[in-house]
Image (cartoon, rainbow, N blue to C red; front, side, top):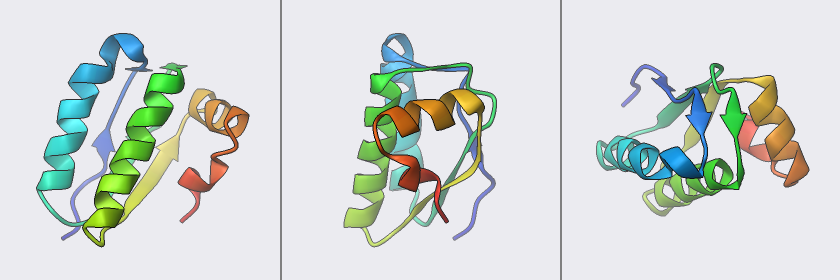
Length: 90
């Protein structure tokens, strides 16, 4: 099942983690591939990285995938710091 990209942001930080966790859990539970639009993210920290990794893991456990349709420079830089640029690979 393909759905439109789910826009997240502008903050993927510890202060917003709980709200985004619920949004992402709902997307995972809906079934099918989840595509994220991170193009408008302006603030990204390790909590944001954890959310993306948890989403990817939850989907993989169901035999599904997470794709990133767009990623802002802040997201790209943050993932590079953690050596996780592969999250952006198709």
